[in-house]
Amino acid sequence: MAGPAGYAWLIARYRLKCADPYHLSEIAAGARSVTYDGPRRVYERFPPDYDPGDGAVDHLVFALKYDGVDLGVLARVFAAFDPNELRTALIATPNGKYLRRLWFFYEWLTERRLELDDLHQAVAYVDALDPDEQFTGSPTNVPRQRVRNNLLGSRAWCPQVRKTQRLVELAALPLSSQIEHSLASHDPDLLRRAVSYLYTKETRKSFELEGERVDSDREARFVDLLQRGPRTGVLDKQLLIELQNVIVVEAYRESDYRSDQTYIGSNAILWQHKIHYVCPRPEDVPAMMEGLLGLAERWTSSRSADGIDPVVAAAVIAFSFVYIHPFDDGNGRIHRYLIHFMLHCLRFCPDDLVLPVSAAILRDKAGYDMVLEEISRPLLRIVRYTLDDLGVMTATDNDASLYAYLDLTPHAEALYGWVQETIRRDLVEEIDILKKVDEARRRMSRIIDMPDRKRELFLRICIDNNLVLSRAKRKLFAELSDEQVARLQSAVAAAFRGDSSEEGAE
Image (cartoon, rainbow, N blue to C red; front, side):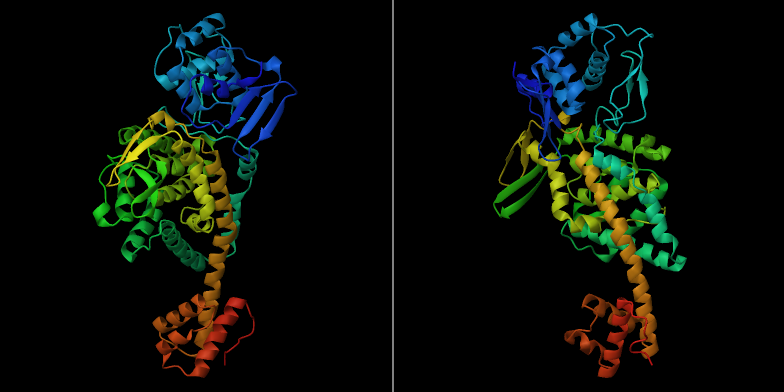
């Protein structure tokens, strides 16, 4: 009989409010076929002999076989169906690997125990997640169902990342070696100055992404945390609050996680809000953050992330944080800080180097927003909310299970792209710029011996103005003749062009 199967059948049968899973199935006449709706959705058609039947457990087994594991959908199904159906199926076929996995997922997600005895020890263990299909955690044997729990996180917070072909290919790239190669040919003093600037650049670009110009005091304190935080390897609530207090102005500093229903929105006009994302309920935030910090601690304490790819781990921790949104302000900048924290702790890059990923994200702001909408947009179709005249939100249907099991595959792919571009472009460019600046200083000194402050001002103005001194700024150097200014401009231009001649020099 034609119709939906697996998760699609279960969602329709129980009228579930949940984001569509990555893979949806249907039974229809004809050969088995697959249709891709862009990179984020797969529709697979199965011939009638694949029809699992009319029972919820039949479609749950079908889903595990063909749709894959989607914890968010499973959590909603288990909250709606009669668990006696699963108990009856297990009594009839106690050793079936798909039924045992469903049994494990049911008890793990609901914290309710089926009236069944533990399995006999002779039954072989089976993985909860297929490690060929998803990134997994370090497995722990669960004797009751004879299942290896290799989920990434805990019940309170357990994102999922699928092993797409793109992610597998990206993970195989020697990006860490490329960083080392980029740095190896430069002298230590140049690298020291380059690293110092890269920390400043990352800080400024991260604030710029939020549409904010950072003052020198907050910039210095944020740079200090960027340098100091990963060295400790400790990510906890205290550090997050310290970060939040550094990032925001004093009036909006917080001493704990938020206690109100927060949302992300914009104002097209003063009296009209456009909501982009409704955040989890404030009462769910502490448990979610405990789960997230526990996952980060497990990965960073071993400095191996259970064998998980470091960029994938960074995406999981950083994007999880921004979706939990534990503070009223500062979440975006902390989210990007966490990218660096994880990359350092998992030794993706040298201890004293920060990759200015925010610069790459800023150049791809539209792509960044699209990735965030992978989660926010589907949730907006589910969550109901109202706003009062003061902009205070009241939300319903945003319970914890809607957020706790996010598919962060697109986010991991996007972060890999930004990291790759940062290594290829920003890291190389910043070192190259410093070398050109040094050469420009050398050439300028052969023309005239200027005070350091005036020389640096001249150089900075030229760099910001296509390598010439603007007419408006000429008065700042009234002590110089037109000939001297012309020769200094030529010296700067020659240094940045890589001209080997000593243009403008005596």
